[in-house]
Length: 243
Image (cartoon, rainbow, N blue to C red; front, side):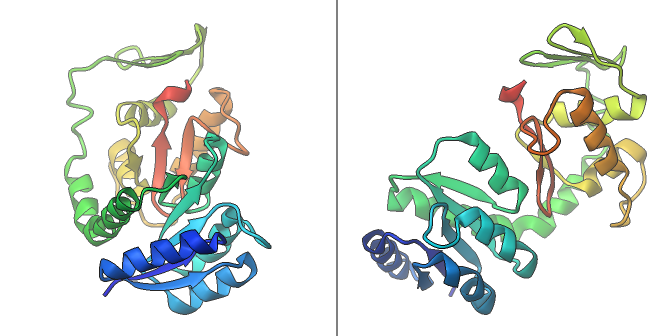
């Protein structure tokens, strides 16, 4: 039986969701106080955490940041905010998904099951990811555009809002790889193998350093990036509608 820790200060909503999840054969632990959430999550090591963003005492983003290094659980954040800054910040510190309030229990359940399936399939997905290395280099596409960003693979040229951006060949290759797979989290293993032709040893920071350089050159706030974002423990995500 899969275990969920549900962190929600709206007691009526918390009870409703907990009962619903139990009917769907989940074990559910509930917490209503942000001060208690971190210890409860770490103690129970659940398969998934459903975490309200706005909580008394300690907010959901802080809890997510605190527990992420201590658990392997999927984290789904509930939010009444449509502000994408909250979403970006959540992904940066380790959240796996967001669901906006008001909540439809069936929709939430579907997202939970999707996350749990993804967790079970990740080792296979990682192998598949490695098997497609080289596909991009074999692609017939020579141009890629998102908003004000224009890339030409043959010329290795990049422009943003009609301003030429000077990139090294390796920076361009990395940006091209990300831009050709928008809204897809690309792992460091995949990026290293695809751009450098070697296996990732878990210590190489070359990709991370190039991402920092790209953010600076492409006017993406390095403190809170919105165009190329870090998905904690997974890799990098190119967000196509922010260019």
